[in-house]
Length: 91
Image (cartoon, rainbow, N blue to C red; front, side, top):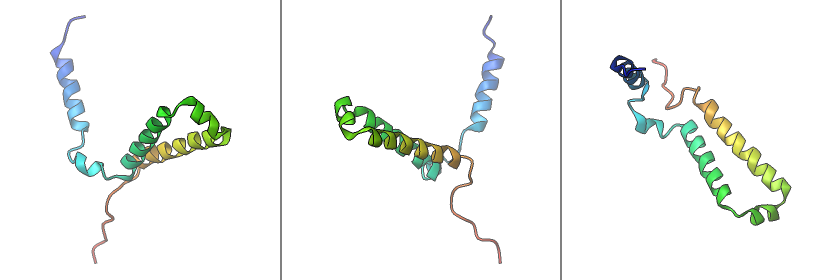
């Protein structure tokens, strides 16, 4: 299979069309904040030693797991919702 620059050029143009031009505005979206918060909490939970997690009890561990799932689900659903300031209809 030989390298075909035509395929790579089409892929580059396809990706370029799909990128967001105002990425700084996207950082303020609720979905981005929810996904970042969920990822940060998962990272913090992984840093805890296992004996400390086990001392919390099974209810806390289950609650943290469900809580992280809900936060990440909110972030995923939020990607499909129009976010930003609400524009008022013209009078």
